[in-house]
Length: 290
Image 1 (cartoon, rainbow, N blue to C red):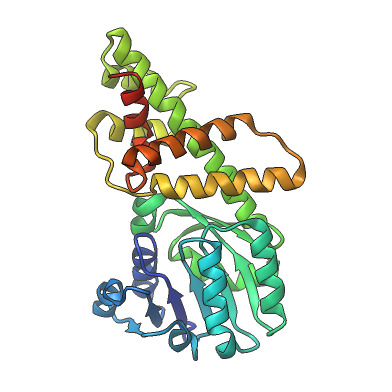
Image 2: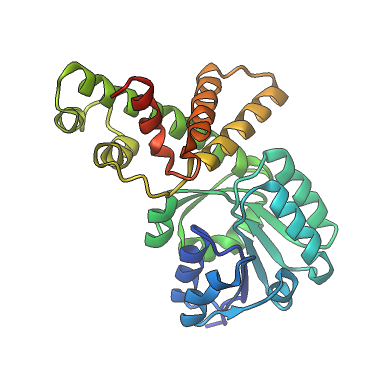
C-alpha cells in the first residue's frame, strides 16, 4: 500500500481543527499552521507538526488545505506560500469565498502547475467533529478523484462543476440556511406569542413538510437559548453578502436573501455578531418584546 500524501493544513480554528484531527486519525501525515499558534496544540498531541509560517507548513506537502476566514485572507496566504509552490501539488480551499475569487485562484495556481479545488463545507462544528460535512467541490474530475480519499476522512464530497462551482453551491446552501433560520425563528415566536407551547409545536410539525435539519438542531437552540457558536451571525452576513454580489453579477434579484441580509446585519448591530447564527431568534424576539 502506498504511503498517504503529506498534507499542509492552514487554518486550524473552530472548523479547521476538528477537520485536521480527522485527517490525522485517518493516517495522513499533517503539517499545521494557524495565525494563533496555540490552536495547533491539540493537533500536535495527535501527531501533527506545527509550523510558525504558512510557507513552512507547505514546504514538502503534496496536498495543501486552506480553511480560512474569508477570501481576502485566503488571497493573502496564497501570496505568502507562492514561493514554496511546486508543480504537482494540489491545493484544496475549503474556506467560503466568492466564486469569482475561486476562479481567479485556480488560474493563479495553474501558472505554478498546481491543481486546485474550491471545496467549501456545510455542517458546522458538529459535522467537522463527526466527519459528516457536506463538501461541495469545484474543479476538474482528475483533481477531485485525487482528493476523494482525503475528503472521505472529513465528510461526503460531491463534484458540482468547474472551478468556482463549489463556492456557488455553498452560496446556494447558505441562502437556504439563512432564510430557513428566519422561518423557524418566526414560527416559534408565533407559537409563543399566541400562547402555544413552542417546544410542543416544534415536535408536532416534525415529520411534516416543515421538517428540516434547522428545525431540529437550531430549533432546539432557540428553545433552550444555547447560542454557543457553530457558525456565527458574522459569518452568515459575509456569506449573504457574497450571495448578493454574485446575484448582482449574473443579473438576479433575490428578495428573500436581501431581507435575511438586513435582519442578520441588524442582529449583529444589536451585539449578536459572535453568537451562533440561530441567535437571529434572539433579535426577532427582542423586536417583538417576547
